[in-house]
Image (cartoon, helix red, strand yellow):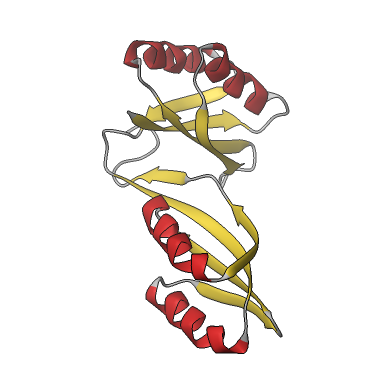
Amino acid sequence: MKHTISVLVENKPGVLARISGLFSARGFNIDSLAVGQTHDLTVSCMTIIVNAEDERILEQIKKQLNKLIDVISVIDLTKKEFIERELLLIKLGLDQKDRKHLESLVEKFKAHSLFYKEKIAIIEISSQKDKIDEFLRELTKFKILELVRTGRIAMDKHGGKDA
């Protein structure tokens, strides 16, 4: 089962390595990891997506995370109502005849055209993982020159950080 875990940490060097080390030491592969500062510049939020076949080991990891001195809170959002997003930037090679088709896809998926020049387009989309995957399937008709995708970020729909 995929778990979405939100971890608030002190914004200090080495914290990311210690946290990711807990997962790898237990044989968990992190499917997605996104880290960024919060409104408090001394605090970062880590969103970790992990496939946990053994829920007991995941519970142990969460308890160990809570014991780390730089960890403020650990919330498993999996069984809560939450919003998640991911960002994709994609550079496409295209002919003029393809531009109209691309523009219709951009509109359909509520993406944004960031750059057009001669035979290149750069598109941005921020959405749920499945919508981005669907958008990418539609773009296979074009020549993908470069693709960059962030990890997912997530936020509980209700309550505060400890809800």
